[in-house]
Length: 309
Ligand SMILES: Cc1cc2nc3c(=O)[nH]c(=O)nc-3n(C[C@H](O)[C@H](O)[C@H](O)COP(=O)(O)O)c2cc1C
Image (cartoon, rainbow, N blue to C red; front, side):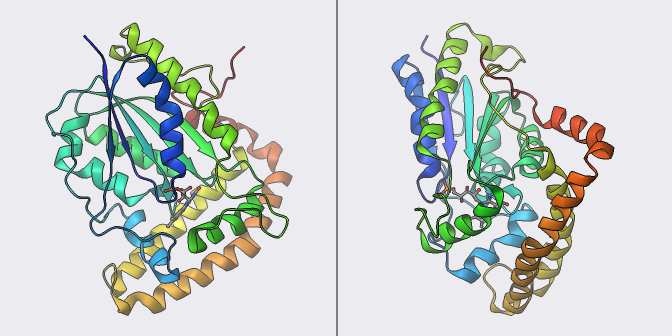
């Protein structure tokens, strides 16, 4: 019997679509049946983003109260041997279309009892979002067996300019001497190694075991100093999202002033708190070493950071 794989993805710029193509080609080459379900939020989110629309998705993304998707094309009772979730991060949370899928009746039925591979592509902060995704997958009855994280390879400080520029103008090219935004072409092409490993694993029924199939392939890299910044960001985002939600629902003009204040807060944070906290973390590195090592160990699961030997 031919193995079958469901890929569920959402991409605005096409970055995640390119990653899905590169990663799944070896599966197609191996004769595996592939259904690619592209999530379609109803109504669609804009890209590039108008400024306030970009801010307006913040509260509902963080609170996991997403805009719904159109019903999937695939039948909810269809059987797949493996599910690949290809998702992005919005405000330290899974992007709304993936949250909506995982919360939907059809999504839960498609995941129930299935092994799930998570593939995230984002600027560089995916840890908190991964915690939320793991919970959503578990609540849907899926078994998360592997996780691959792809992040912008350019310096974190440069991405504070290049990512918002890309999101708000649609342009991701070189800008003011800064490298292009996003995951680069080599990183994208190299995701084929995961497709090869999955095709081999499926050929040996390894998806039926409760064990990762992508170990030793440098599936993730956990950057220690970003972990504590993310945790602080999550706490602040919980307060801000509750406050803005209190002012009105998504799309309502009444919450524009609160969104404006939140934008100001974000800019001030990036200009002041982020560099200071990075410096303090460097200075306190010996004191934080054990805590960071434990966090790194936790977030490297299940697929690991080890490279091929
Ligand atoms: C509203 C919004 C918020 C985002 N927040 C984050 C974030 O918190 N962390 C991060 O690493 N990337 C963040 N990103 C970048 C996305 O994760 C992703 O890399 C980018 O949107 C490109 O994905 P695409 O394939 O959908 O075009 C954000 C993007 C958007 C549109």
